[in-house]
Length: 640
Image 1: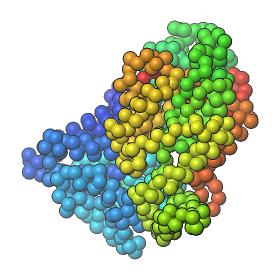
Image 2 (image 1 turned 180 degrees about the horizontal axis):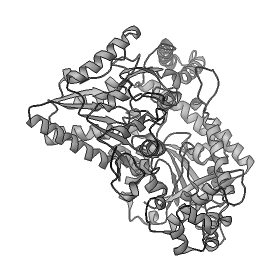
Image 3 (image 1 turned 90 degrees about the horizontal axis):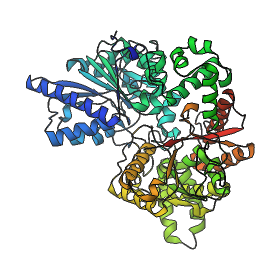
Image 4 (image 1 turned 45 degrees about the vertical axis):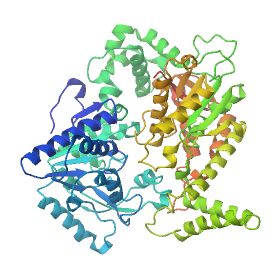
């Protein structure tokens, strides 16, 4: 068991290091790995390194490549073992982990090919058991794994050890959890394309490594990381077994750390500075855990929940309750662009200027409707100049089945009067149909521009239809089409100077009074986070521009990443009709609807998630003792 390092970490059963960013954490780990490699090389010995895949270790691998190229780090004495591989995928499949590891790391360093070990996705089912035993024997023959790098999935899995995996499990074939497959659906252009099985090192195999390092980035990993670090050991959360290891640590960025007690409720683990923001967070939390409205909290409730010091500094409860109630009430507005000719002292947005130039930035089409469709309609109806900017085409998110249907429609129109276009479209359609239903088939022509162009047109049409549903003209849409997206694919995007210049020119051209943007605190390799980081860099470059001094930036979130009440600076209520309009707008994004291959029925529909999220936020405000609304969309002001 690991020893306690500070009072604030008293609930953490694994040493956890919080970094300002995934980049700084990755640099620290890469430097540590480099030191171990060089030490072993000086001793004339090998270093056995266990590796993970997915978006989490991408920045680590880029830093290792940099160390090799710029600082002469040699990997000639390194033997690697990868955690897992999808069963049924060959090495050339775009989503195979063999291909991922070579594209991200092995092709760029000097590790000998015969020292690279990755599970074979094409081993025959009847031979899997023997193959897995041989993999374990190869690890043992190498002397065991010195350092194993891990990520954590939303189900708490490490490797592909899904909930239910035992402490002593070894390398084997496993059935993937439904949530794991759903999370991978976008990479595979549809959940039906995601393999159902994978070969993975077992929990016992992982725990045999001499040292373990688990990485977690982004707010989506906050809850499960906190459970793994602070909760009980359980096979329902395989990552919790890491608590049993003698030499393990967890590296997180601030977003992924937000679920830890020392950040979520720091007053429960030590003395704190009771800033206004922390007071609001703690009192809101107290209302939620006691199930009492803000104005009905008593001194005794504060004392029973570790907040007596707050009462001493800022109480009594009666006055503190009223202050937090008023602060929360002032976030509510029906005028997200500011109400003209009104006192805006306690309003979240300025009255003037009116109308405002408003930019809504969406990483890909539908993000803006999911997060703030009702607010977009409200801004437009109140006379503001609303422009919705789609930073990417979103073509990678269109399933092949949708593209095939669109191609058939195009063929029916162009067969007689457009033979050249008909021939091109038919070629795409034939390739799509040839792979329809083929087990383990790669998404058809994933890098072919003709297919991606067709899928981009599908998403453009859906986006325009959604805007019309909200009452906006189609001219309100700008399809920026950032090149990094068109040239790449998920988990491997790398924005560059061309993308920076395009976004900068757009902002300078519009000189907005308001910008609504999403992606902050997401997994840094996600499209949303990359787009937000690009936006952040552009604003830093424009610092000092007169128009920017008058521009306010509002963060919105999609339904799977919801705001807590204390994080909200502007809450926009929606009536039943406005909520229905938002849902109808989301529904226009037909290519993004999910089909369950097992039941043949719709599941996890985005419009249902968005509707539920907006209703639940309204209920949360109601539970705090504020007015009861049908639904609420929420925003946090970003100050850079």
